[in-house]
Structures are given as C-alpha cells and as structure tokens.
Image 1 (tube, one colour):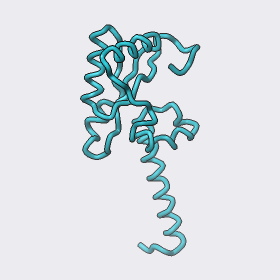
Image 2 (cartoon, one colour):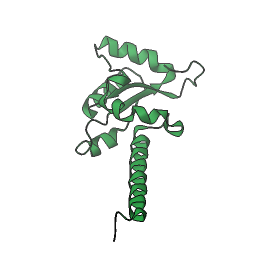
Image 3 (cartoon, one colour):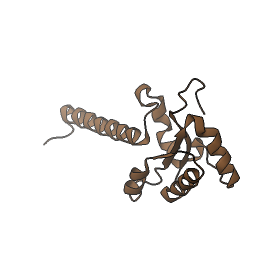
Length: 136
C-alpha cells in the first residue's frame, strides 16, 4: 500500500495482470474469500487485445483489505507480478513523468499518448507545408 494517511475505503492497486481471464480468476477468489475487488481496464483489454498487445487489467482492493487480499492470494499460491514486470509498464512509464498524467488510468495514458502523437504529426505537417516542402 502506498500512502499511510489514505482513506481505508479508497482503492489501491493490488496487481496489474496481462490476461483478462487470469485477472477475473483472481478476482473470483478474492470475492469468494470476502475481499472486495475492482477490475480496471477489463473492457479495454478485451476490446483492444487484437490491436494493442497486452494492455493489462488492474486489480484494485480497498486500502483496508489490502493485507487480507495478499494473505488470501498467498494461501492459494498465487504470485502477483510487480508493476515494473508488465509489458505495458514500459510503454506508459515515461508518461508518469508528465505532471498531469502521473496518477491517470491506463486508458487516459493511452489517450494522452495518442493525442500527443497526433499533435506532433500535425505540427510537423504544418512546418513542412509552410517551409515549401509539401505542395497541395
């Protein structure tokens, strides 16, 4: 858990799982043991999995149930990957350095990445157009 003064009901990230089926399996175990959990990016993972490789599903639990969740998963011999082990971490890690994107969800990071890329391409097109390199 990251913050000591955090609201006990606020969600904290338990793990980022690459496959949606594995995340749903872990969530079902947690729920069966009485731990509330939320799957973030589940729909994005299922919709975009054919286009974007391994966008991952984030499993969140209330801060007050974090310890119980880790104990339950340990009892079931389920080892969770760290955030830095995921393939998506490499894609979005540099976005964390942008002040307004640090705590954003994966969807917002991907949208931000898309918007920045489109803006850069538009700026390049305008520069090339006005420099005389491109004629329409």
